[in-house]
Amino acid sequence: MKKMIRYVCLLMAAVLLCPVISASAADERRTVRLGGIPFGLTMYTGGVIVVNVKEDEDAPARQAGIRPNDVITQANGEEITSNEQLQDIIRSSEGADIELSLLRGKSPLSMTITPSQDEDGGWSAGMWIRDSTAGLGTVTYFDESTHSFGALGHGICDRDTGMLMPLRSGQVVKAEIESITKAKKGIAGGLNGMMTDDEIGELTVNNGYGVYGRYTAEPEGEEVPCAFDSDIRLGKATVYTTLDDSGIKEYEVEIENLNLNDNSGQNMVIRVTDENLLEKTGGIVQGMSGSPIVQNGRLIGAVTHVFVNSPEKGYGITIGNMLSCYEQFGGVSIS
Image (cartoon, helix red, strand yellow):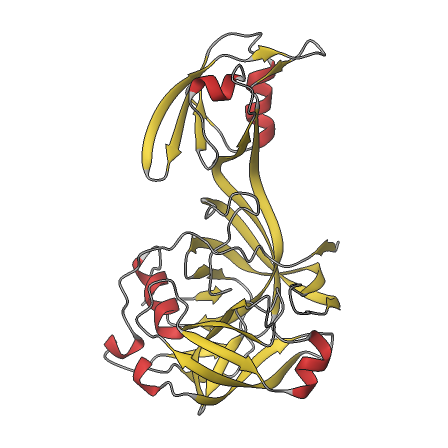
C-alpha cells in the first residue's frame, strides 16, 4: 500500500551542540555507500508535544503552567505514547486532577491539571498536542561499518513550534517521486511522492545534524571515500538526487562559501549551476535535504536548507559532522 507524502519539515531545528569533530579526526578515511534515494518516514515521539495552549486564563493547561514545546511523558503514572491515549485519560477524568510528568527542554517537571467541562459536556485540557510526523527526504549515505544510514542533514522538527521532535520510534521506507512543486523567489518548492512498502530500516536518532538509523535493506549505492574537512574546496561539486522514476542523477553545483566550524551544521553555501536541475526544480527544493554532495570523488556532505529568496542557493553540512554526531549520540559500531 502506498501513502502520499510531501517533504519533511525544513524549519531549522534547535541546534544540537555536538562537538565539531571533522572526519580527519579518524585514523583512517571512512568509506560509505552513496545515497541519493528518496525515502518516506513515519516518526513517533517519546511522549506528546504541546503545540499550543489556549489563551483563556481559565484554560486548564494554562492554569497548570503548561507551555508550548513541553513534552508530556506520563499521566497518572501511565507512560504516554499517543495523542489518543492522553485524550482518553482527560475525557474519562470527569474533572478529577491528573498528575502529569513532562520535559521542558531537558528539565523534568511535574504538574497537576484539572480538566474543565466543554460545551458538549465532555472534558477538555485546553491544549493542542502532537505525537507523530511523516514526510519525504533523501538518504545521504549507508555505512556498512556500523550498519547504519544517515539522511536529511538536519533534524526533524515540529512544523508549528520549530522544536526538535523527541524520537520514540520510526520507520523509513523507499519513496517514489510523483511530482515537483517548483521553487520561486519567496516560495519554497518541494518534492511530492508516495511511500512504498520497500523498507529501508528503522530510525534510532533524530538530532540537529540529521536522522539516522539501522538499515535492513542492503544498500545499492557505489562505494565512495568520505572527505576530511581539509579536502573540501570552493568550486565545482556534484549533487546526487532523485527527481522522478528515472532514478538517481548527478547535477552540478558550486560551493561558494565554507564555514567548517559552524555548530549549526551550516558548513557550506552551495549554488545550483546545472541548467537541467534549475529547469526542473527552480533550484534546491524541500525533499532534496540529505542529497549527497561529492567533490573530487569524495563524499563531502549533504544538502540541508534552501535560501527561500534565492532558491538556487542553500546550505550544506559536512560528512564529518554527520558521521561524528551520529556516533556520539546513539551510534553503535558492530565488529
